[in-house]
Length: 89
Figure 1 (cartoon, helix red, strand yellow):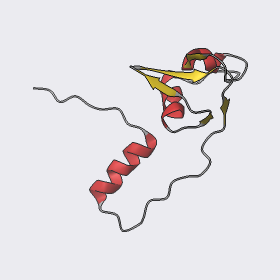
Figure 2 (cartoon, rainbow, N blue to C red; figure 1 turned 90 degrees about the horizontal axis):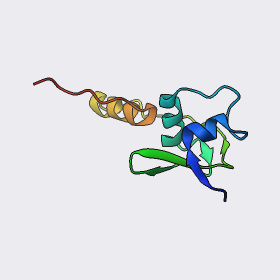
Figure 3 (cartoon, helix red, strand yellow; figure 1 turned 45 degrees about the vertical axis):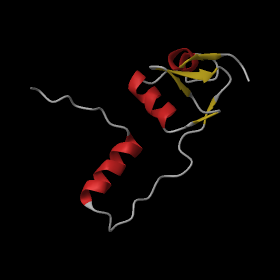
Figure 4 (tube, rainbow, N blue to C red; figure 1 turned 90 degrees about the vertical axis):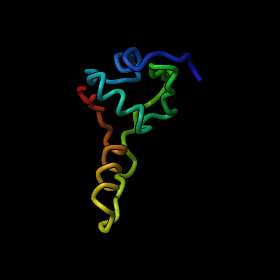
């Protein structure tokens, strides 16, 4: 296991991407475990082994068709990632 580096440094390094994706995409990759070994969240930032490899999603999650709409919406937000909105007031 190599040294832990930030997601941005890893993505622009030799084991990352030719053209690194946006920060939001990198966070989604880390959140959904699309690297081996997985990225770690340390406080507010994501770190990853400098020798980690991107593998992508191994399988697409399948939601049951008879799931209540509220639960299905929540599960889709968890799977795809979502940005929280702040209420005014």
